[in-house]
Amino acid sequence: MTTKRRGVFVTLDGPAGVGKTTTTRLLHEYLANRGYRVHATAEPSHSALGETARHNTETYRGYTLACLVAADRYYHLETEVRPHLESGHIVLCDRYVASSFVLQCMDGVPLPFVEAINGAADRPDLSIILQAPPTVTAKRVAARGAHDRFHSGEDSGRQETELYEEAARRLTRWQHPVVAVDTGEASPVDIATYLTDRIADLVDRLTEEAATA
Image (cartoon, rainbow, N blue to C red; front, side, top):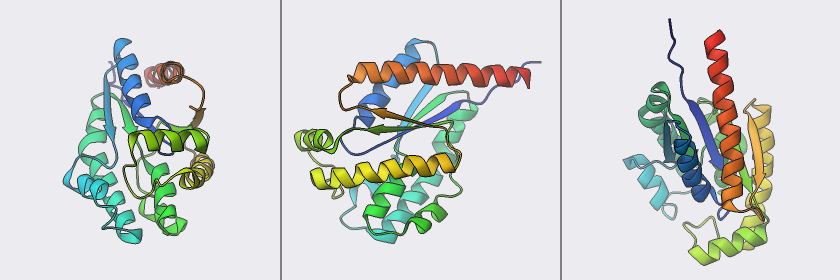
């Protein structure tokens, strides 16, 4: 009797301008080319909740925005992430809990509150933290344009970088499998190739464990 194996949940977080969207897109392409079933998504999601959180950071702040983002996360898990995992996909999520640790804290929300409202969120099978020097990310954000009020130059980039380093340590303490990657000098192709290998190895290992369970 063959047991259908659940998919693999991979999240990507990091400061603005670090390359999350590009890396997610390339991972989707490279993993699909290897024959894996892949679903790429993002947070805030494209639900009504997510669109409200994404496009109204000037209106909603502090505790209000933190709760809105968390509510969207739980809805996203329920309606999109879990169904694709149950059907055996690798789910790639551009931004997850680590981004709440960083952005909500930058917005003045105490970390224990952020931890509490996100405490029931599903644990990823792999949490990828992308990092780069603040001078690099600030130039990238300036070239493309800031998406919201959190990204206002090199100073905010430096704060984000430091908070993501702490977020990676916090996720490790929560027993999230974490891999940190510096995108400052490596090419997007090299980064995506490296992470594709890591994810493929993870999928193979989990498949083998499921087969022998």
